[in-house]
Structure formats: structure tokens, C-alpha cells
Amino acid sequence: MSKPNLSGRVAIVTGAANGIGAATAVALAAEGARVVVADVVTGDATVAAVRAVGGEAIAVHCDVADPEQVAAMVDTAVEQLGGLDILVNNAGVGGGSAPLHELDLDDWNRTLAVNLTGPFLCTRAAMPHLLASGRGRIINIASTSGLIGAPLAPAYCATKGAIVNLTRQLAVDYSNRGIRVNAICPGYIDTDLGGHRASMSPDQAAAAHERREAAAARQPIGRQAQTDEVANVVVFLAGDDSSFMTGSIVTVDGGCTTTFNHG
Image (cartoon, rainbow, N blue to C red; front, side, top):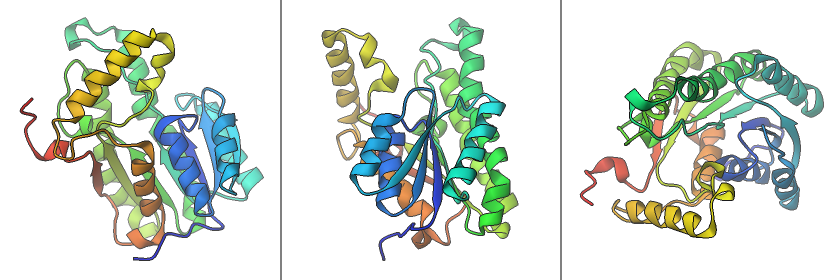
């Protein structure tokens, strides 16, 4: 299998200031794509990381739940980078940690707005340009929580399950028009816990990390993934080596959805 080559292509990665999104922006750029680093917080560090691998990137402030900001993001990609070929819908929020009957309605609504309406808005705005490209690619970052239940995460599970089937539906409508649409379902990933570590004490952050490591240790591979292990799959789906894949739901989860968690 040849290594993907994305030279001459333009990509938008949402939620690209850190975590999977940042790793994805760098990985796409390393293969030659010019990248829009989109996030509600500054993406300057990701842009610097892209430039460090010899790539080209611009940072754009974008709340994916805001239609006007999404439209401006897409316009910026087209105007400054010359088009749009790849959309990675990565931005997401956790959605609170509570059983459904205790979940605050504002948490529910915000989770749906970012995790589900956000990819809808981004895809809708990007679609004319992806169609014009003739080689459009959409990669949705879902979750293993979209395939199985997770404790105290009703909003998150609901939105990620919806993204899984939205991916299949988009593949039905657009694959015969030159756009391939696939989703990745990561499992335990060694990230900044959704940005929460900054608000934790060192002891709390260490304890949270230890809990995730203990849970990850019970899956077949027995550890958390690094963000680049997910980003590498995004690059594969964005490139030509995955030419017969569309509507695929790819787990990058260390095998956690293959077996019962006996821990």
C-alpha cells in the first residue's frame, strides 16, 4: 500500500487546537495538505506545529454551532487556500456526567448543538466546494460511545450514535457524486480529558488520568491510544488508498468494542 499523498488539497479540521484535531492537522499537513485549523480557542500552537513539519496552515476562530461562523470558516478556506477537498468534523464536547433524569437541559442542548448540529452545519457549508473538488472527503470523528453505551453520558452517546448513522446516510447520497464519507470511533485516547486538566489540581488530574489508564488496561491492546494513532487513520481515509471505502465506521479503540469489559 502506497503512502497517502495529499499535495494540492485543502482541509478543514474542526476542534484542531489540541488533542485529536491538532494531531490530525499536523498529519494532513505532513502529507502535503494545506490546513484550516478551526477552534473556539486559539489554534496558534497547532499552526506552529504544522509549519514545523513544513506544512501550511491558518487558524480560524469558529464555534461549529454558529451558522455564520461556520460559513465564514469555509469562505476563508476557499479564499485563502484556494478550495476545499477534505472536511474533518472533529469538534466536540463531553456533555456532562449525570444520569439522564439529572441532566441539565442546557448541557443536553449544548452537546447536541456542538456534536451533531455542528457537523451538519460544517458539512452543509462545505458541500458545494467538496462537490466542485471532484475528490471530496468527509471524515467524522464519532466515538465508541456511539456504538455502545457509556455510563453517565446520555447526551454524548446520543450525539455520537447519530453521527455514526449520519455518516452512513451521507455516503448514500453523495458517494456517487465523488464524495466519500467515513467515520472514526476512537476509544480511550490519551488527551487532555476534554481540556479539563487545566481546571484540576495536579492530584485530581493525576487521579483522572490513572482512572482512564486503568479502564484502558482492560481492553485487548491494554493501553490508551496516542492522538497520532487516530490522526494516521484520518490521513488514510482522506487519501486515495481508501478509494473503495465510504459509509465505513472505523474503530480505533484497542479492541474495546470487541469484547465485554470484565474489569
